[in-house]
Length: 189
Image 1 (tube, rainbow, N blue to C red):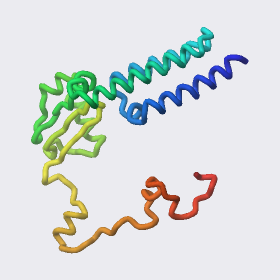
Image 2: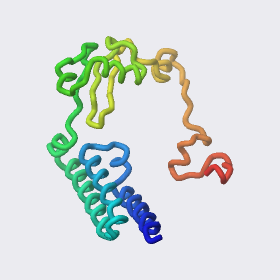
Image 3: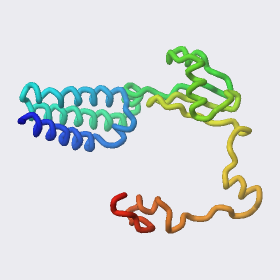
Image 4: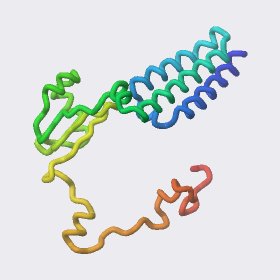
């Protein structure tokens, strides 16, 4: 039964340490973050078998401190960010696939097309730029002829004000520290 409370304590310690690491670290895993998170996972599992609970929590804390140090250095020094995360690579420029960059990333044209289709893009000729970002996501800019019309574009064309400011029932008011605009069932909060 001793292992049950140790497991619960390790889960809570891991959650607290990951919270200290910050949301960015969890949502945008870099190479350094991935290595540290795997190390934390491995370290947290060990004490149940080895009876080294406090050493595991201490090791996990050292990993998190190291992660915070790496993230600070990346903010402070551009070369450190380039070294650890890399830079975005241009995959398409002015509707033309940059095959040399695809080859350097070990990515095929079919893989690029699959990822573009997943973002709703049907034609490479509609793309001004496509980049593969350091976090693995695709970034893109459409050519002028392929860009969707915005409310601002319509307002300029029609010479009328179409959009209204956010109303009192906007869900964004809650995130700014205010309460729900309308009563919500307590079971759903």
